[in-house]
Image (cartoon, rainbow, N blue to C red; front, side, top):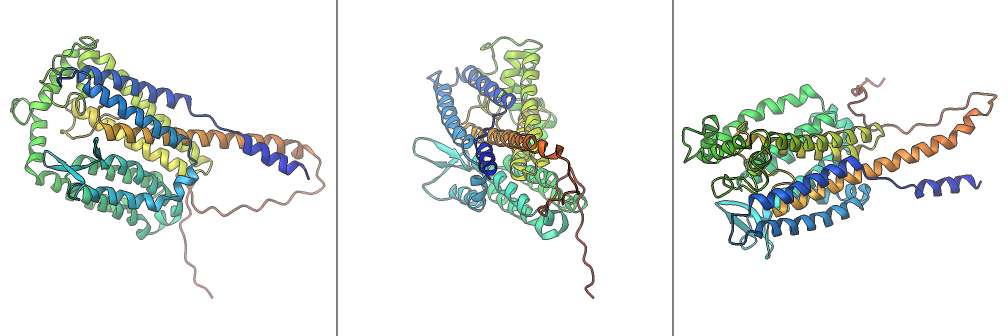
Length: 425
């Protein structure tokens, strides 16, 4: 009779461990961001350390928020999923409130906090991923089997995108839709059924992209930035010249010429071009490798969580991996002339208060996923170790199978049984 309480106490006493590879990559990217923000912004203001000081302050705040996320149980986060979705709409609506919303160059994407502006879409990305992860857990079977369950998250995403396009923020809108589609696929949605909204939505979104003249100029300048080098192709042509000057080993840290008031937004959107100029092809490959390890490790954690039926943690890891991998791909692609210009920062490296803070929160959430996964694996290992002596005892009869709790859904790793409807006699 004393074994059960002792076993329960031992299981509760077991702690987890944060993924060391994930933690190392996050710290490496954050450290590189501090160095490159200092280098790329040193000639942009009368105070050469203005942007560096600002970046370090927001990075410190982000680390504090990440620590809170790392210490918060995922069950507690999942419990407030509906409130998090409501917060997404409230934040996106707040930018249109007079006196609270802040406009920069005609775009209403920020709210004024007094001491600084906050770009609300950065918080929306994290909150939306948590809500969608919870939704996929609650409706795993229905998402695969019925149209309404699959269309509901798409409808929520379209509503959020509509509010983003009013700001306007086409880059974040595209990213949010891509995250939604990716998480639905990884959550087990029926692929033929999923293709219908994509086929219908892509032409509409392409029409919206070319509807505004400034977006059309970005596309045409992307095709040939040298045709109007001092006009619509100014940003991309200077970014390409910066990358070209770097060659194999770069011109040396701090030696960039393009950052000296030639390359616009050298410390934010085009910081990767400065990396290419100062650190060369080798530095560029190192940065891409760090993002590849970060995204790959996040996908790996998500896969292991799904295998252990920890679906909410797994979907959170998938969502964060999709977000970081796609945003870094777009940012790098823009700097290398592979994609039209978009206002997306390089995660953990580009200067930006709200972007840095909320990316740190996402990394804290991802590290919490790794902690709880490791803790669950240790608990399972302990249970198997204690059950082994019982299995060795001779049995006179075959033991009855323990009742299995019905599985509410399945993952991509297991074949899903489509629901059938039989006639009741």
